[in-house]
Length: 285
Length: 121
Image 1 (cartoon, chains in turn cyan, yellow):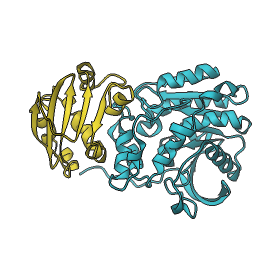
Image 2: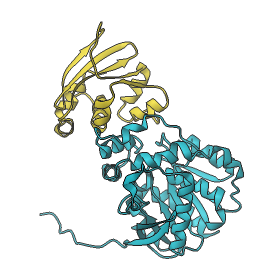
Image 3: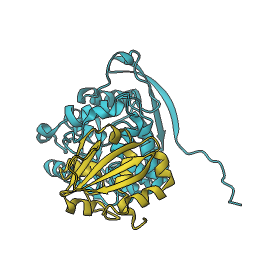
Image 4: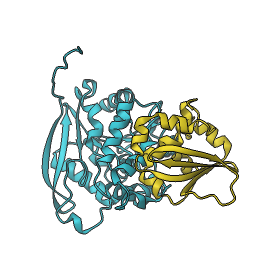
């Protein structure tokens, strides 16, 4: 007989937040764990806040940080706004910045740290450019100033192709080949559950509207410190892309061994080992 | 390099299950060496080396031999782990009717990477 598996709850709590976002009423799902400096986590395109459960379950992090992650509208357990059926979802830089600031305000967060991955790693650059005074520090995971489309995005949302399966198929190669199977397939499951056209709509920001190459020179990390972490196997936001951004800004960047584009969900234990020293630096600011 | 693909795929019952709706022929080009791979109900049923005069296939993946050799290593070097990585770097071309490929992308990625998994025949 196998040993008895004792039931237990994780220290994560989740609630639905009603707020006005981008001028419309919204219902957002928000999870959090821990106490201390607010650490607002931003998920990747076409996924949701579950990606950050490895942080919220790590006491080394939650003893000093209040880790908060919300599902963006259309994602995870957050609803799209009423009337969503009448338009195609498309994320823009302007809306994305406003959304993060409005969520931070709704949660009454005092100069949180914002940490985002992929599209989230891009938007922290926009936050540094637009509203640096609102944040204690910014952490970019898989950050690059721009990624051009390298496949036909129309495959991601058409009735004759299973949207969840094709989205997972597209991103599957971005997970490090050395990732544990459980982390790999949980990461892909989040993509398989994405609503129709949501990943594609997020990629409008990532591959078209969110190009920030022309504004990097206007970012001053003295106004808001920035830190960058990128997995070596990420061919979408490459190590070279991250190092170029960090060099330009004079910020610190670490290329993480054996990790890919989804470090916090594909291999949480290994990722937290890279994140903890960054969080210690932020505590000392 | 493709002599193991049928054995590896067909011995993997879960991979065959995942491809149970796939019925197509695709082409792999290693430099100018072409091979047609026939898939029926998720199984590799024919592997036909060229040259061909009028090959009939839905989609093709074309890359230089040196690229395929890296891609098929058990743990490929950085940048050679995935078809889309190679496409992004313009080291591989995927062309033709991509519908069977894209609508079964996770399946085809594993089929095409099957030679990594060794010597099964």
